[in-house]
Image 1 (cartoon, rainbow, N blue to C red):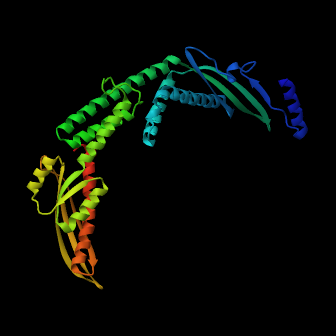
Image 2 (cartoon, helix red, strand yellow):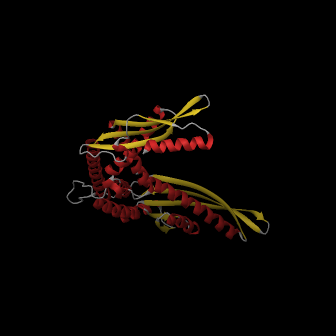
Image 3 (tube, rainbow, N blue to C red):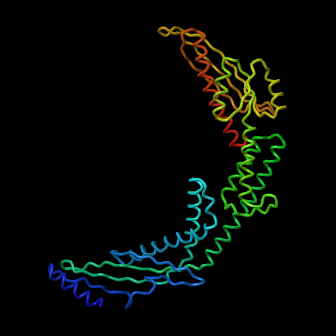
Length: 360
């Protein structure tokens, strides 16, 4: 049937333009069965790939192998990550998980062997020469034991990560009991990160916190509570600038109580007694300027320091200066102070959040 069709095609080609028919030769008398369906085996996985129209057999074989490897990597990736779908809760986590799975799948494919090759060569006379094109199919085989070993290795690694997360969570609880809120917050966040990097059903080996899901919930709740406590401050500042500084701090989640007549020492004692981690001291000056058309100018300069309530050490400092105008000298000075206060508060909040992330 195939030879009859080829003959009819050749006659048609000759009738249309007098061209000689293409000649096809194969590497085997008939195409292998695996072109239609790859073999099934209890101890081997098989993957096929194809490339049509290659200019050489070597090129076609290489491209077909790459196609088979790509299919194998996709299959293996699904297999070894089947129990880890709930890891991908964010775009960043998803990308990281996909890259990890891809690298592991590619590593396992080094064990894949070329089981068979089949090709068909199509030759056409062009001018005084002949042009050959190759359609190539390949069959790769991979021991199932390789996939199972990777799955077991990954499960063991996940359990170790979950166990480490529980240990970090308990360290955080101890740090919080000692009054080190920043240290506790850093450890809770680390525990949460570890819990989210593995499947929720991953066992931790801990009787009270049995799975990564339980750890994730506890670490999240503890981190939220520690952050709320860690972002409290007593602000010592003149009344005319305190509002703008605390407004900027509030945008970053800091709750601040302002005091204008309290000494630095008294504020530190009060903060320590209340469990408030920060005392923020604002020194502010304003200087009137000249006239600007129908208004007057003024400049405000702020020197702001954040102190650790436990030690009294300066952990962050900001200097900010701003110039503004108003209808009266007082209005100009207040406008300049507001602008400087907002800028200083924003910078200080960013510095304190950075301290949180760095764990001091």
